[in-house]
Length: 322
Image (cartoon, rainbow, N blue to C red; front, top):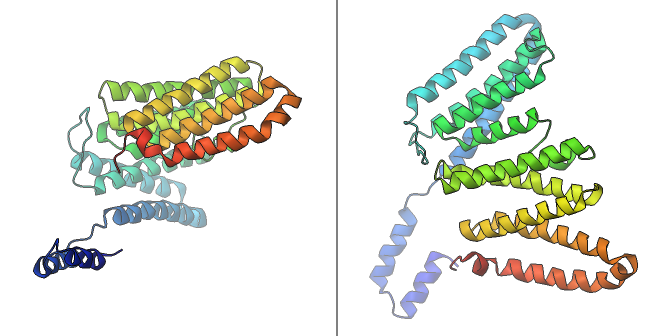
């Protein structure tokens, strides 16, 4: 249904006159069209292509350019990015800072990426950090946390959280949590659960204390996925099943509560999917094999219908008006 169809319907019902419809049609045809997100996507793509291009140029010409020249060039670009960011940023605040100069966000992201490239180059070529890999990871992590809060940048915050997880020996990217972590090791599993809970708690406190509360989603989303998946794997394969069960259920309940509070479909899906997985596994491992076979058909049929019905009516549950 387009504008013309709607206007014709309103004219036929004598809600609008023909001149009024003409004015509305003219306005709809000539009003400005926002390309905000398109431009931001192009800028992010440009940063990725630029840093990738620098890497390829360095790789193909490393013998002719020289290490010192390459390092100096990357360091100069990194310093220029941070200088531009500092010069054009707004004063720091505990609230969200909306800088009208959106280019600053992309320059900061480019500067952080170049800093990682510079550090990696120094370590690879001159072994600056030796075998102290933890130090090599924690330095950019601290810098990224400081930049995230000083310049109010959620992309840099994600990089800092990823660095913190790497420092603890974990991968926290949502698509790499399962493939990038060795959850068969008890230490990795408990570290993942602990870090995830700490991140979720920190996000909740940020929201309650109104200190960069717009960062709370990033903390809760990344930490919640990490802790919930680790708890489920602990429930499946480790001995302290009751502990992992309670942690997983508590996180699922928290995300359902958080979904209602923030009217967030993402948190609702996290709470429902993780909670359903934990409860289903616990029921079938408790009742025994014979009872599980007899119960299976009806359980999955009715529980699936219930989950689908619940998700189809998620707007009512979240209190979102149609």
